[in-house]
Image (cartoon, rainbow, N blue to C red):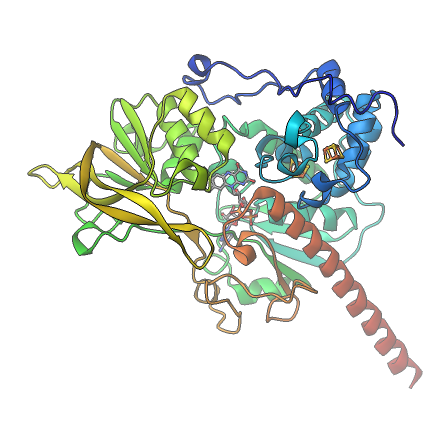
Length: 495
Ligand code: FAD
Ligand code: SF4
Ligand code: SF4
């Protein structure tokens, strides 16, 4: 029901929470946006027109009931808003911070055309931050315990969302991760200026309090065999993400994998970001201490145009690089990264070379990289995906100074059947794990999969969605197995 606090979009302008100035944020890894205060959240939520067919909701991967929690926020009924928001989202405070809202809920808000969208993500964050402050967020302690145990491989958003939901239903949950911390790419990929680490660790603490068991520094396939894992648990969920960095194809002498052993002058994006996150978390990393992975005072070139590239350039700015340039082969309009992140990067001092393709590295007499030779390009005919392909322009070469080149060209799955020594685990031609989408089960009985390892590199919000769906299917499968076993036992007893 629409109340008089709503439909204010004609007279009330869109506002985001306060953003720290570029000069302030260039020097630290703190988040750049503050939380709304209660009044600002209510005002902004009140701009919603309470659509009968809410396109914001349709374009949220979780199908969040956005109009309802906006109305409750506008009316100051935040505890109810939290109930509604958390019913469909396991980590709303995280999505509110890092979903690319301009491509999802907000980009599809019907008032976007002409009046600018409702500030959905920031309100979602405000609701959950209030819930944490008020003590409304509870650990997943079940009403009753079930004896079946589930092994989850991967403590990223997909694994954690599944773990939370299954634990609430009483299952005995163990989450295994080869990293030493919980959170997957939320802890070691995404930088603190988008998602502060204590936000992830606060969730970890709740999951532990709810009785979820974590086994860290444990790689399934080497520290524990996949076969043993299956024997140990009644069901298994694979949520291992995608980690094989793509490399540049610039001919034999210039492959993107540090051909000459160039003292870390060619660095894969995730290696660089993980190191930076570890430093922020207080770890000692020798490659950073000895200067080889530090960009301080260096000319840095980042190759790629996605969100990972944006995270690298903005991290390099904060580590006091001499210059930071992003090289992307298409133009700004065709960049896969979020427009908001590009704008933030530009404000912070990153230079963009659009329509440019690296063709070689220039090196000094010791073979040390000193520059990236690029060729200008123009956009030609659309390729199979419908995107215009870049075409090189003859004799347009130029060189960018570079002491370190960071490759942010995307990720592919590792060889999962090989990693798990399990050739019967079916994968697609891209290497992602094949599942039956009706049950989320893999080719192995009782083994399910979710998140990036199924979809390819995607988003946290899709990981949460998949983890929640997998939890529902695992529960149905175990419940049915238990019922069948009990029927069989009864029949045997009766015969
Ligand atoms: P992951 O988060 O990758 O977690 C998988 C976990 O499995 C890891 O902890 C890994 O250590 C563990 N693992 C792997 N193999 C094994 C094994 N054999 N044994 C034990 N453990 C194993 N998404 C957004 O929505 N917004 C953003 O702003 C955003 N920024 C990003 C920035 C960067 C730099 C990157 C790389 C990604 C970003 N993403 C963003 C994407 C998002 O982080 C992923 O889509 C999401 O984390 C995938 O979740 P997941 O649970 O499937 O996998
Ligand atoms: Fe928007 Fe993401 Fe929240 Fe959905 S989960 S409402 S897409 S911010
Ligand atoms: Fe409100 Fe926009 Fe969603 Fe409509 S599309 S319900 S105006 S947030």
